[in-house]
Length: 170
Image (cartoon, rainbow, N blue to C red; front, side, top):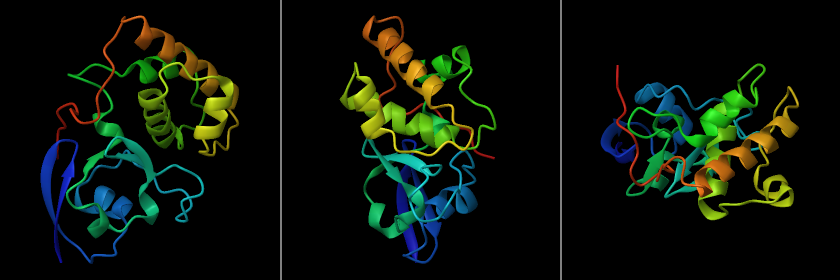
């Protein structure tokens, strides 16, 4: 089945079964491999992307269900070649250890900051349900607070997922 998806601001046509999980369309058909496979049952969050600006677990969403919606992957989190404030905070606070969960964690955090610009620890704990096998949750929380502070102070522009950065293919 031919499905037209809007991914990172670009219209993309894929020929897949309607029930193919969005994760596999992103990774295999579109070669956007930043979104990771973790559990396949939407429990771990490694596959988190934004759909219309809201965090969603792409391993459990059929590709046909998101036609006509704006899909944003980790490849478009930054803006105009610049890292998102969260990506900078992740580096500054040395969040990643193995790094496997990080793209999904960053996407979940970006969705949180878009709707709650100055989250509390409770907001973070409630909204960021992604799993990190390395247990860097305290670093993640500190990095989210640092990015929120930077974004609210106007030091950097927040990336609007409706206006993703240019994505290179190939």
